[in-house]
Length: 411
Image (tube, rainbow, N blue to C red; front, side, top):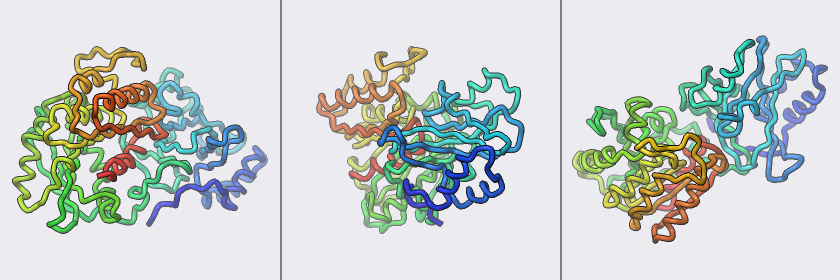
């Protein structure tokens, strides 16, 4: 089945009735209310009464348990230091929990719900917004859009009406049509799993090559092969094979991504030549269509690939690169826009003028935004072909998955 079409601000009859019922407060008929919710589209979205560029988004949760609160963890809106913004309110004498947030109309982000038990200490509650929450989140049972699972539990995706389209991810009725093979290679100090996805296209069609670190996420949890196949079939991108390299675990990820030159050299000296040897009948589209794309620490890897392997990668895509990263561990505790970035210094020390660099960042990513602005402008000043896209969101696969397709469309 296909996911619901892009969100409209025009309420259905059910949504209008739900808003009317919520306004009655404690006197509402709870059974009838939840019956109406089953036919509505959630979260509820309406225009902001104070700012035409924003939307008021209302989340609902149902629980009869005696809870201290219910927490909505919305990427870069209610997480980290802003946990209190995500506390829901229980309508007295009901099992209805409710929270309304005002958000930019182009926002897209992942979110989940956490039930906070009675008696949970405040210091533990404050940690729920961190990367490693003490309690697992739960997806929104009323959100009919497909979920993503990055952190070991399902999270829902909130896409407001002016968020960029993600056509390849919205249609869940189509499966990947290509062929996926798995092997193991000794790369960057460890024996690790390597994936290769070959799209179903005529053998005579030249193939681009997309290289992805964090393959265990992109292949196993996000479903990159299906999205790429759909984009090829729809003619949005040219035929593209995918080479993915797994991390062994989180600790290994920190060690091999970022500024690790060994990983990049092993990719270009071992993995890619092996592909050419194993698939002699493939017509490869050449350096300009050989791309390394990464996110977060992987975004730093992409930028380092432009430095260390420009003879192989004609393009790199770097989403939300960890501009605070320093392999020498000289990073400030609270990295801000005025701090020096090791990443920028490395990239600008030898500007890769023959590599097309595509940068992307979420508007809510704090100091990363001005640092990427500055890097982008500095690259342009040195003659590098650089592009910068700012998505309304946080540090989040919810928009990274769409941005990776966007980054391949100009090929």
